[in-house]
Length: 465
Image (tube, rainbow, N blue to C red; front, side, top):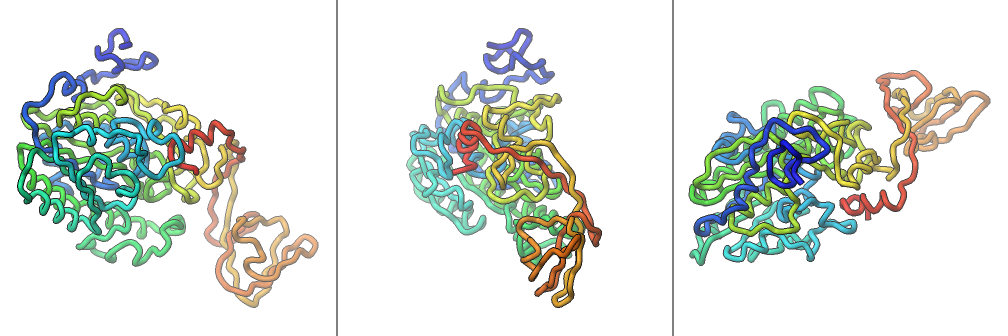
């Protein structure tokens, strides 16, 4: 029931929260009242890993120009910081935790997408992301589904299909991969190699690259990729013409060391879950709503504009954004980077910590150990130089990381109050409880096991098997 003094649409106002200033009716509510005239073509371009704040007139003139003529919410949020749950929400109009009853790396056969309901159209998709494939269920509803090795090839496939004799209206979905790792722009910025891995050979251990120059170089490569994908988006918009319904959407963003971490999937920071989304419907004026919009709402908007009737299973309109937990199977780079900060979820200009039942619990879960956080402590770690053949004597009170015990460096034994190591290789050893070079303080947490309900929630979000 709508709150008294709210925006008037059932479900649009949460009764527990204060009203926001922006009470403009959502476009998907407006579209639900009337079916479109005729059967227009539909283009959906998914730009993988595109941050909302990187869409600018200078860097992405075609994406920006499309958005300025479209329904373009200021706050568009992905329900998950990685691709599969996000695309599932976009295709279904429902949050991922409503789609994945068990740990899943695929779109379940029992999920009906709005694409399947668009029976009046020829429905084609060209994919580039290896996690969004026919083998993972994302071909559902498409008469043609093809994978491409790169964005240029994807656009070429789209052109070839579009040139075929027309049998009726068409839906074309193209998933572009350019801004995603390995950051391989055709024209690297000055001082940067062709792609990140020319210098950073182990991106899962990116935490070792704390040099500001390295971080700036990685960010420049990402920005160059974003600029290049803009041309591919422009080519697709030109292909379908001005009479088609067109949408340009990103599945998630990317952290570029703003919170001590890198890439996506590991956190719910706004840099990762705030996305670009713009839907242009011929004959409708531009609209720039300020309230938060979910990626599943974007899918609903596009479906309604194309003529799909509202689905009773769709998530109802709301002014509260829910985020699901990351699904990344590697240790976090930085402790603070594995969970959203308090108040990351936005409603208008206010901040609220809200979420689905699983996300509320899971936002404080550790990625690597499947344990809940408890009390935080601090630990100071220093690098100690190790030289093969030279005996290393340390206080017996020192501690070391579990994956790097003294025996990893050579024979070791305790002698009274000292630890004596006979290294067989050279390098540096991270120790706590002694002095050395390049010391830093880390936050640590006490941990407790997950219970069955908590595990069930994480499975529903596709995080654990």
